[in-house]
Image: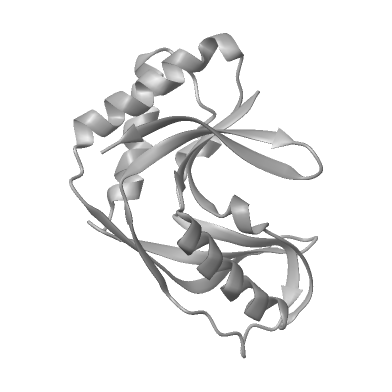
Length: 178
C-alpha cells in the first residue's frame, strides 16, 4: 500500500478550492486538475508500506502530535505558485499558518519519530514546502486568474492511503488529533 501523512480539508474548504480551481481552469491551456475530494496538504510522503507495518506509522503520528502539542492552528490557502516541470508545471496554492512554521515542525517531528522506529525515509522527502496541488502538467497564463483566500483551522494530521482506481482516491487510515 502507498501511504503519506496529510492535513485533510473539511468539505467547505474542498468546495472553496474547487471553485478557485474552476476560475484557474479558464486561464489554462491544459492540465490534470485535482479532483474536489482530493485537495489536501501532504506533510510527508512515505511511499510503499506493508500493511503489517501500519501500526508504527500510526504510533509515529500520535507521538509527533503529542510532543508538539499545538493548541490551535489557523490556516489560510492564498496565492498561486508553480513547480516547473518539462512536461508541464505543477500548479499549487500557498498555505500559511499561525503559528508560522507549525507544518514544517510537524514534518520534522514525523521524520524524527519514524527514524526513531528505525523506519528509513528517503532523503528527498526531507524537503517540505507547504502547498495544495491544484493541477499537474499545467500550462496557462495566470495573470488574470482570480484566487479567493480560504481560511480554516487545522485540528489533526491524517495517515492516508493512495488507491489507484479510475484515478487516485485518498483513504484516511488514522487520525492524530491535537
